[in-house]
Image 1 (tube, rainbow, N blue to C red):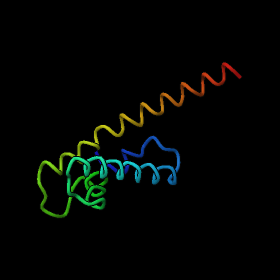
Image 2 (image 1 turned 45 degrees about the vertical axis):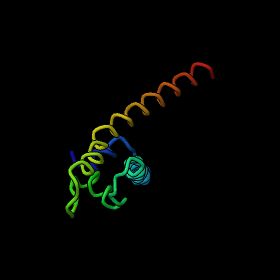
Image 3 (image 1 turned 180 degrees about the horizontal axis):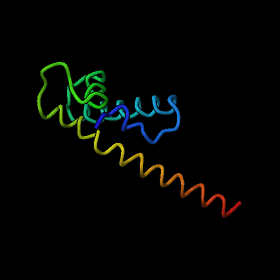
Amino acid sequence: MDGGENLGNFLKNNNERDYWLDVCVRMAHHSTAIEGNTLSQDETASILLDGYIAKATSECEFYEVKNYRQILPKMFSSLQEKSQDRREANKRFS
């Protein structure tokens, strides 16, 4: 999976896409850093968006970040469904 395109496939415009990809990178970086991952935010972005990192790193740290590539599309799909449900509920009560 190509992170940049596939993580942002569900978004309608480039501004929205860029914003949410930045959120994804920051979320992955900070949540893994809390657990002791030493990769920088740029290195995290490289793994998420390009699928590789240009320096030697521990396999564990690499896969901690790479695993976000699998969950983020599911998370966004869930958010879209909830958003659609809310719009439909609002229509019924309007």
